[in-house]
Every structure is written in C-alpha cells, then in structure tokens.
Length: 328
Image (cartoon, rainbow, N blue to C red; front, side):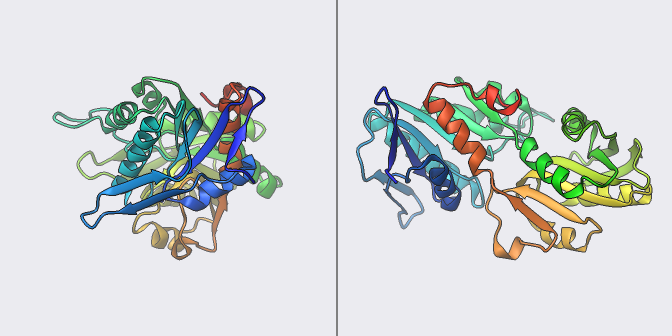
C-alpha cells in the first residue's frame, strides 16, 4: 500500500495518526488502501509534544486522526501540534478526524461563570489551521455550529442497529431512551428496527455532581420485552445501569445497551459486570483495553464508516448521502 491516495485530478490524500489510538488509524488506512504517513512524535522531558512528518506534505489533502482517550488533554494538544505542522508544511486542506469530540458535554452554560469548552476546542482547531472536522455522534448537534467551517457529523446508529437486528431479530423489542433528551434519537432507532415500540426513563441529574443520576420511572411499554437502551456514550455506567434496574422492575424480560463511545471510566467496568444487562454494544471510537473487555461487551469497528466518509470528502462527494441523511 502507498502512503497516499491520488485522484484522477492528481490530488493527494495523506493520513496522519496521533498516538491516542494508532490501531484505529491503521484500520482506516487499510480500508482506504493506503498507509499512514510516517512521523516523529514524542514528548520532551517537560511533557511538551514534538511532531515532524518524514515525508513532504506540500499540496496534500491531509486527514489527522486522533482518538481522544485518556489522557485526553495530551492527545488534544498533540492533534493541535499535528495540524500546525501540516499548515506550516503547506498542506492544501486539513481535516481533523476526531471520532470522539473532546469536551462535547460542555456545550452550554448550566450555571454562571462556566466555560463553553466545546466551542473553545473548535476555535483552537481553527486557529491551528484546520479547514474541516469529521466526528461521530456528538453529544449534541449544536456543537457542529461552533466550528467556522464544514463539520461532517457521522452516526453509528446504522452499524449498531444492524447488530441488534441480526442478534435479536426473533425477540419483541422496545427501544429505550435513558432520558427525555435522547427520545429523538430513539425514534430513529425504532424506524431502523422496523417500527418497534419506544420508551424512555424519567430521571433527574445532580447539577453539582456530574454523572450522578437518579432514575425514576419508565414511560412506555416494556413488560416482557427485550429493551435496548441507546445512548451516545458510557462514562461511569451509572446512567445505563440505573436505567436497566428500572426496566427490570417494570417487567422487562431482558436489557441490552448500545452506545457509540466507550469512555468506561471507573467504576464503569465493575458496574456493568455486576449489572443484569445482557450485552453492551460499543464502537471503537475509543480504545477498549483488555482489562475493560467484559464477556458481555461487544465492540464494532467504526473504521469502515470513517474511511468511506474520508474518501467522499477527498473526492468532493456527498457525505450526507452515504448514511441515509444521518450525517451532516
């Protein structure tokens, strides 16, 4: 495989990997039939990040892939440095591929004197030299408006729903939104799964302690049905485990969880392991370590979806048309 993909008009696609999750970038490169452009990337003794590309990037269509896993601030800064190096190396267009957009939960002010960090991230990418952002399943779609340029917002729902349809096609299914804010997404899931019923969990959050949830009651038909809880990410697991308990108390026969991003911060692994949830289905937008791989955990590859979008961007095609109108 070559390190770049050239179009009939002699454009040159080059893929650059951050150190957050290089295995994902390699999978994307394999889907595209190319290799990642080699680079020297390391930390100085004081923790500062150094990046230098080993090949000329002049005039290329550059795609910087970085997975915002722990330590997220380090990998975010590295992606900024990578973009700056490409800009100063005269890349023609720079697209930042962040399957998990950092700070996306801080998209508005809940109380006074709080930052809107998702906007700050967008501004920093623009200042560094990024022309475009490609991401998967933002926490809220309004984040797309924070970046002064095109944002391609991909959805993993078709991938996750296909797994559900294949695995649980013989069951009576109900799609469950873990809160009222996910009802719209759940409605799209019900359409994808053939019009199955929809339910949601009525709950409240503690505004002072992020991640602390009090689940209350189920709204919808869940008795004797296999319930699929859908969400954009699993952080500590508190939301989905509490929702599963409420569903079982309401008479659900089984509970499955589907989410795009597996943050899996402590105590997520232990909570999920000890829960009554039958299966947790995630994509690999973030790396899942061997210690996090539960028997009930299924991880689907996001690389084909991202690679297809990259190819469409490179060829000036339509990203939106690829995914039944789900992508932006």
